[in-house]
Amino acid sequence: MKKQLLTFVAAGVMAAAMSFSAFAGEWKEDQTGWWYQNDDGSYLNNGWNWINGRSYYFTPEGYCLTNTTTPDGYTVDASGAWVVDGVVQAQDGQQAAESQAPADAGSGQAAGQTYSISGLTFTVPAGLTLDEDTSEANALFFFNDNHDGGVAVLTQDIPEAAQYGALLEQYGEVILDEAMSEVGVPAAKGVKQFPTGTWYCYLYNGTDSLNISVGNDISEQIYLYARLKGAQVQMVMVVGNTGISPDDIVANYLR
Image (tube, rainbow, N blue to C red; front, top):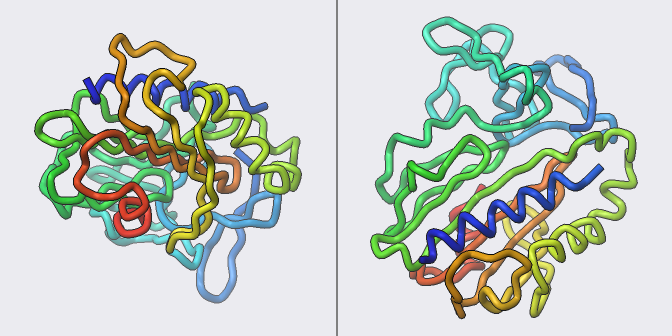
């Protein structure tokens, strides 16, 4: 039941994010290495990003890794592109603007396992496992054994964001508020500071507060953490009995 709720709400969140009308950018090099600067002056860092159909891994300082194995166990070639058996892994032409991690959703489910998704790394807490049936490159779902508690880690690029430039960052909170109102009517909203930065937390009081139907009425609170990073919406959703407080999940298991 919670599994259905989590996946349906996630679908609504992703649809809301797509309603926004990937910053273009350029590669730059200095004495340390190559890095990628967005049009708004920010730069890519902390994990995987798709650029022109290829996936690159960036360090916390923003430098592209080359000719090595990434922290999450993938191989990149001399140009920094993700390769498998020496073959560069290209993004599907219809999804060339998406930014997503080349994570294998079907491997490694034990607590403590880490998964990377578009610059976010999630360490699985004890009691939760990855759900292989519903997870994909830009949406990872983790549930307890009873499926009455779960966590979703989601990312979505904002189409045609480059035309808005700095306005996207300046009015980020307003944009998120509008997107989250498409999901439902939040009972409360807060601004949270975590090691990964600032997140906006939206609290929904069960299915009665949602604008989508999930087939069952569920009274548990739904915590949705969201932020804009560059031209991307990043979200973490917590529902039901996870054994850990929602704030702790974002603060201690997300990097």
